Image 1: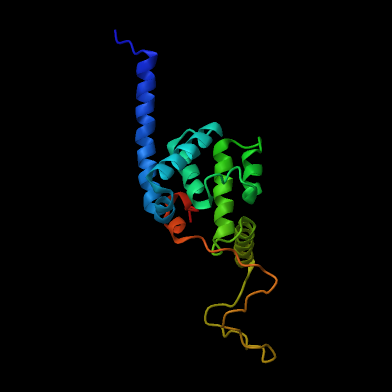
Image 2: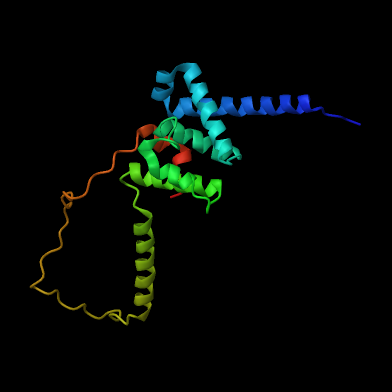
Length: 192
């Protein structure tokens, strides 16, 4: 009969953790080369270890979630989940209504929306989907023009459609551009 002692189990666990840590360090070096260069080898490993420990403390244990948490620590700053700069993040992580995985998903989606101006807010996406559904229902009811029938003449009082770009809204503050390294990182993928 094979008996594995507690010390042996702890050694296996530590070895697996170091292997995971090594993969995550390679990952962040690939996607955050400037940050890693500024931190140096020990600083990079230290930030990975610190973020991994905080992810575990928040209840995130699956490797993809821990990796995404570490990725956010490099994209937004080492203490992004505790920083006064991102109070909205700590509010989400402290909201007991959601599982740790859902909390991380919410933080990731909101971070992408805040820092990538090309990503529309969730409300806009939902509104567009609702409008498209209503439009398809309306099209089904529309009798329209029969094939071969001439379309009605254009109203001469209406202006021509505008084909150019609209000027930016002076009231609207632009979002900061998401750094190129974060755009390439698959852990920032919106699934679209």
